[in-house]
Length: 228
Image (tube, rainbow, N blue to C red; front, side, top):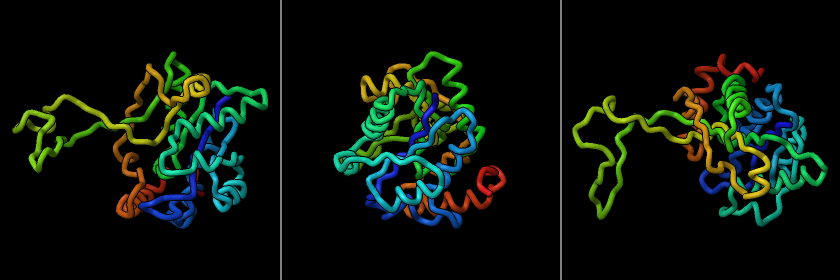
């Protein structure tokens, strides 16, 4: 059994009520729910929230809702702790899934094939988790006492640097037993699925992120055919 988890708390400091905000004419959370409902490997789609309005919208869209306790709804609660709480509720029913797919609702630029591929990659290997990543082409460094400390050889062309990748937040597939036992989403053996940089533009945390993601969605709407 595969469970899709959509962690959607009501509080958001940078973008208030982000998960219910209209994105291309629909509540932002709709995109993650609709995606999960269009992937045949997923058996259950569960929204974890402490917010009654989010819960009502999620139910109206056909998702299950697990009420999140206050301790898991503050700024310090981790996705892993929320995932463990949901899996504990499911296991209390006598059903322990094999895999947990975490779909963050602030990442609407996902395709069915992308997430399907992540799940198939997980089941084809003996890993603790699969995460989606995007290749980084930027020259990164740190600032120490107002000085820039490069993490690369100054003067090198970006195309000549050793490839590095960043976690883009689009999809996490975790072995459910690991999450239950250790309270961790990733474990030690983490497989990476590299995806198109286009989709990484949809990690929404700020107003600018929101505007960029909405523009990309409208520009490439045919990529997201699961939304009618």
